Image: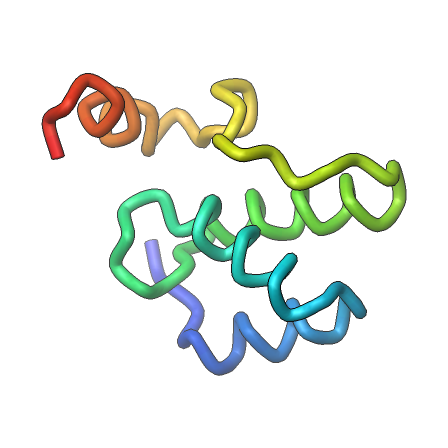
Length: 85
C-alpha cells in the first residue's frame, strides 16, 4: 500500500485541533513500523486515536492497544515487544 507524505498527514492531523504534543504522541503510536510515514493502515489508526481523544474524551494511550493494531502490523509490533527490535 501507499503512504501519505508526512506533510500531508501532518496537515490533516493539525486540522483536528489537537495540541502539538498530543499529535506527536498519536503520530508516534500510529507509525507502527517507525519509518516516518503513515501508510493507509497507520493513517486510519491515527484518525481513530484523534477521534477517541476529541469525540470520546479518552486519554492518548501510552501503548497502542492490540485491538487497534492493523493485522498487517501485528507481527511487527509483537516482535518489538519481545525485544526483536
